[in-house]
Image 1 (tube, rainbow, N blue to C red):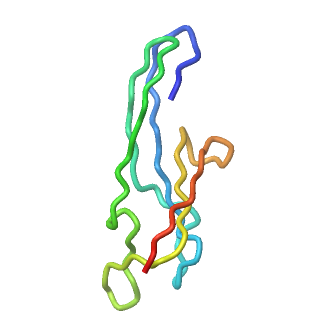
Image 2 (cartoon, helix red, strand yellow; image 1 turned 60 degrees about the horizontal axis):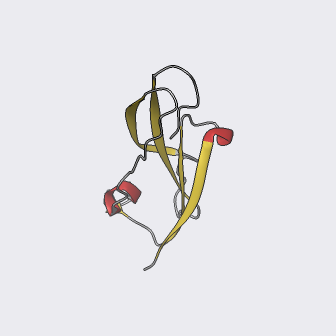
Length: 94
């Protein structure tokens, strides 16, 4: 994350995940984490999130936590707007 301005400020970096081919209907984007960081003018900072099986899990129809194999879209940005998000695909194998 980079502050390209002349003043210090805070940014909230948000992590969203989408299960691309779920067996059940799930939200298009699920907020899975966020971090508030402070940046001085012109400062850059690396922000990381740990993605664990719990991050990818959902509560299935049998009332159990489940992680399905398949592709997940990982989205990180300053808001949920598509134009603000950087994306990468994560594949979970069976």
